[in-house]
Image 1: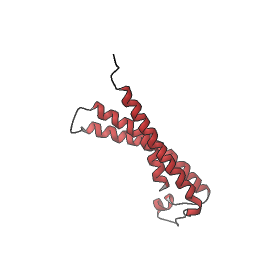
Image 2: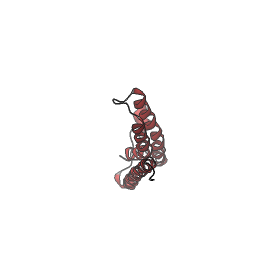
Image 3: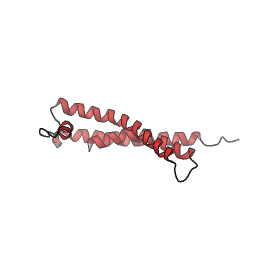
Image 4: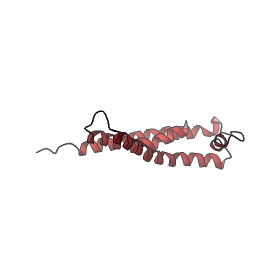
Length: 121
């Protein structure tokens, strides 16, 4: 759950304004393959930001001897994950970061929308 929340927290602020901008620029319905490929590229860019947040959590877990991803990838060893008593604060932090990412995405989206409004006068 923590890694999902952290990944989405990085994706939201990047993808929301860029996808909205591409929708506003596109007059083609149904959407062309180029628009869909652009959205894919935008999501990849957001995933890089989310990956940085996940990296912080995973580095904390590895320093404390917990391991899961390398076991899943190699099919060897035993999965060792932190118990709820050790990870509860990461869960709260990840939810807060997810909410912050969503708020930043909405603010950027509104900022871009206001810039596109015609000037009075």
